[in-house]
Image (cartoon, rainbow, N blue to C red; front, top):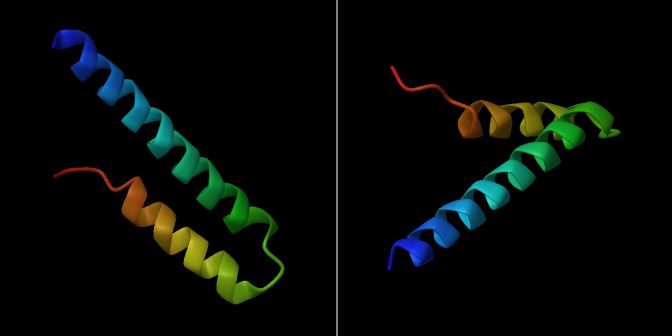
Length: 51
């Protein structure tokens, strides 16, 4: 059971890292200002720190 939890955790972490990376790349290289701004907003949500 513990192995399945570890596998699920590592898969989730990988998908999260992929989503953050895709948003960061889009925020830098998108052609339109609107897409860059939207990508930055997505990054703010994904990387929000708990208070």
